Image (tube, rainbow, N blue to C red; front, side, top):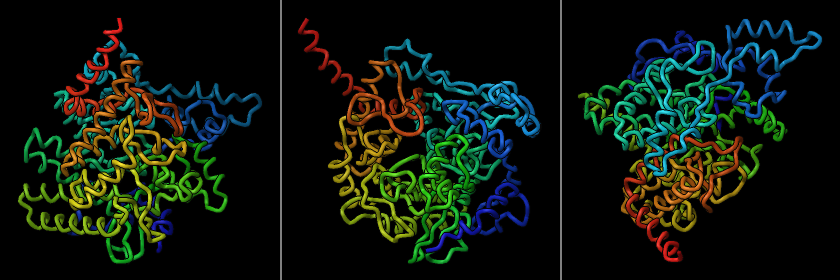
Length: 555
């Protein structure tokens, strides 16, 4: 099996920077929607704009969080700051911390912790939305933050910017709370990013532009279409097609057994996708951590390790035993060798929605084309991403075998509606036996210290599970997962008056692990909680009342 991306990575990086140039731009094809004009040249990330200074600051650990300096705002043009640093750094008595303080402003904070007064969970979330909302004017001129045309909601804590897949679950909550205009604003921002940069980046930071995140744009369009009707599909069809073209770039040149960027053609000719990043350098937001991880993998080129770390960041599961060769050590990461079941389920959904949008726009050839693409992907998922033990799983395209690991990603084929009914039932049975915990659906069975492993339960995965299981008639299991997670969120809220990024599925507390402390806010938890309250809130209230009776009787 051959990865053509590794041979062409330098050229591809150059092409990304100058995509409008004819020598680098992909050749137009009938099955790819033409762009609405030239893609903007991406702004330079901080580690590219002033690399020597960036490296020095991060290695000196001037800030506890490596993301902090990546988010600081230069007070003048980065090129001038770089030149000033290079001229002064070797002078006697040079003070690096003072230099940074003189040349950069602190990044804005998302102070979700300031909202503590509400005793009711729903009212608390309603009070959080304004705190987490950013205005178009909030993007400074020289910083890494990319401006957006409409207001948007950030997750909270250290996450001061919009995130791609986070935002869909935030939008669910906004829609549930009757904030239709904010949902439309968020959708328009993502359409803008596609038009401007050719894809939706991981987040609206210059250092996130080299990768995307799980493709939920089609779900966002569907969410808005519930209110706006068929016109919504027609309005966003160009961006839907450009999103698809981004994920499929290079597919038409692949021979069986080859991969390029985000596309893999398996030995039988099946076309599936993986995660990828255009750069093979340490992530600016986790710079020292990536240097340390690469040092732990002496038999691999550092660039390979960096790209696999970045690809895992694109997956949203950063990090998880799913991507680790030995299932425990980050230095064995091999994300680009994995064909993920969740990613391909989302792309099946994207292709299905494009077919619907083309039909509503009276484009029969496009409709037929994308229906065919979706069905071929569905067949490939059923062929390669199914473990005969009874669950959907990832596929190692380099080793040529399906994973034996049960993870919460197994429920994405149910969520996307592509699973065969019998396989959906077998997957549900496996999940029931192996992943359900008192605090909801655990991410994996392995406790590695990585945050996308046990014992953590994450809000988006709870919603995928609940919706996917209900779609296939597994209502009882869906309710168990939803109510368990909701009770966990409610218990921590009543104790600490906050919602957090992740939870411990084994006990009534926030989750742990990963590269940074537990964050509160929190966008996607807020959104999923509102949806679960709509489904199971009355039962939760009755359960709380029953719990309170014995205590009252004791007095």
